[in-house]
Length: 170
Image (tube, rainbow, N blue to C red):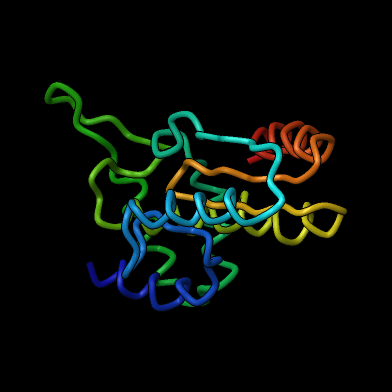
């Protein structure tokens, strides 16, 4: 719990407003309310709806650690998080080592997911995708599910193609 509080203190200020999953003072109801407001009040004609399949089971430890090290300089904190990630799982009484994913039900898993998803796709969308668009676009994310609303069909299609490539790299 102490590590969770440390990570939240470091990263909460960086997370985009449109990120709702597992964050302080936000609920699972806030994301659909935001999405409704965007669709009803902005020039939205096309929607890309994404759920990263088995995200919590498959998140790459190496990439996650790279994300963490962008803001955390204390090697002890990084080492503790690494130990948490490598803690393994018990399946039918047998211990299995892990090199990917976050422990199910682990107190850090949700904040680690938010850190990872802050860099890909949220920061990627804001720094790479948005500057290339000529029409309206808005991302709304809850955990590993996110929706991007677009004004223009061609931009929605190009984004969908680029997203498949981006997720493939991470």
